[in-house]
Image 1 (cartoon, rainbow, N blue to C red):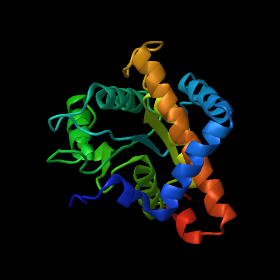
Image 2: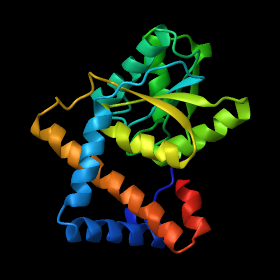
Image 3: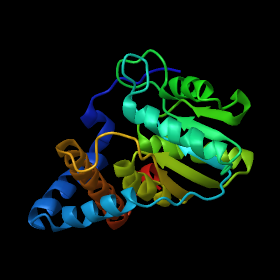
Length: 226
């Protein structure tokens, strides 16, 4: 498992940089209307709990702090463990590779936390090759296909779920979403609204990127998001 060091712009590539520019331009030219529409999606999804029977519970990773889960990541893991105890799925998949300055993967730290929470090792699968949400879902999709599994119960913090669900839909994953209610920031706080606005823009960027890739007929760009 190796860390791939590269700049943000290098990771974006020409297509990503173009879609980012388009997302910024459409947000400005639309006088904020596209952002307001996506913000509505973010807030609606944050309030919706779709917990239902699934083949696996997927807990999305988050960058570690001093090699340990942050309060947001721990809240996701605690919620995933609670769903497992309730019997919604037989296994939990925790995803996330080496990110930031960590010396171990997000998935490895997440597995350790799940074990501490009483989830047995045989019920925990890890995906340790991804660095962001899209890679999390793309890699987990391949794992599910190898094992003949289909339906996921997707766990993240509430404000992240609209984007995660959109990415999962683009990858043709069958998912239901369940937000981790204890995840910070506190609902209604300035930090909460700032996070909501950030997620609204990232969700807008994703949809602009898909539309742009289809408009120019780029199979290579579409393969990165679908």
